[in-house]
Amino acid sequence: MKSFLLDMVKLCLAVFLGLFFFPWYFLVVLTLIYGALRALSWKAAFFIPFLAVFLVWAVYPLVISLQDDFRMANVIGDVFGGLPAFAILLVNGLVFGFLGGMASLSGYFIRNLF
Image (cartoon, rainbow, N blue to C red; front, side, top):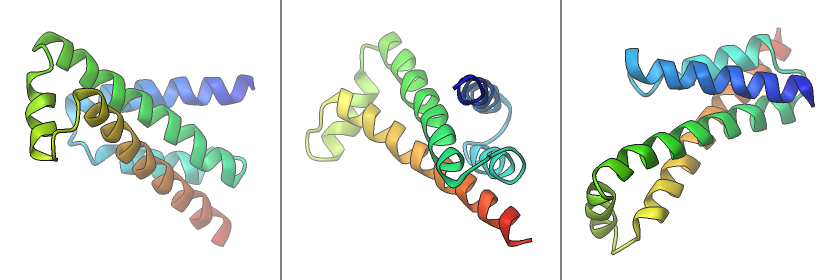
């Protein structure tokens, strides 16, 4: 449990700091490296990066949306058929979390291949 939380916090910080210096797809490289070097099982290789990236990509847009009174999230929701702002933020976190989890899982399987 301790390793799980420590890995998740490290990944959260790395992804969050990477948002400021690199493009959004940097999280794929970061989680792929995590999966190749650090993951102990396929479950850990998927769920730890999934949760870490989900937290960052759901909370950070939430903070930005709170500053502009959810205007941008509401506009995006209107484009997608009138979805509420909360649903847009949730989908954003799920999509990027799944992307991070799959990248890490790929790194884990690449490590096991060799």
